[in-house]
Image 1 (cartoon, rainbow, N blue to C red):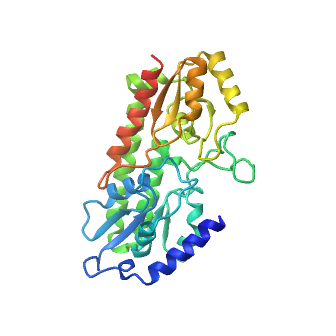
Image 2: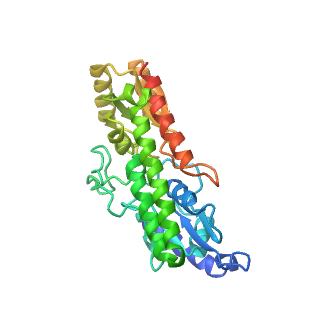
Image 3: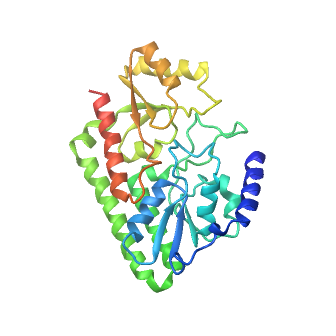
Length: 303
């Protein structure tokens, strides 16, 4: 944390001398919201994408699995610096940004969203269990709540267009809720109900709850913090006892431990997405496609 704080101070000093950190004549009069992560960017772009003089910008646009060890770049800092407001996921996901966000207008999309406790395999730097799981966007219905929160924040920020923000936010939220219902009732949604899965990322609890899956085990593998021999032994035992045909890694995460399990138990390794990266201009349709693909991947892995 001390290293990150020092880096942030250096970046702040650098940006102080950069004219690009302030709005230019080209962007003057445009309301700019900087979205910390791809999921909140999708919501923001879906709500304001066709509105005049409003722009959603993605801050962290790199291929990442999650933000546990993320270090801000100068470009990230510039995006925050020039924005009128910063949209965050909340629920603790962006705790490392506290110093950067101090004194800025922040729209927290997690307000009022029911949180799950952190997975038993994921611990903070002091060895204590996390109090809450911040990966709330992985449940489409919670994601819909995030859309409403974002619309309310935009309405407060820009009162002259408050009604339009709320209407657009409600339309996005209803689309996500309808999507969740439809996917649960689909052939794939019905086929995966009750399945037990093992993931090598701890961010799928909300996804599992949304689609009636069971997380048999979840281990977060990070650089310098690979799964222990005891954890591997535990997972091998679960795979063998439940006769599971596959384990799942995250698209941008490590597959080291999963490879060991695969070789030891003869199971296949499949990839799921935390939906943390994509293309500029994407909307919630990209989210819906990714969630559908995740569910389809699990179904195919268990055939």
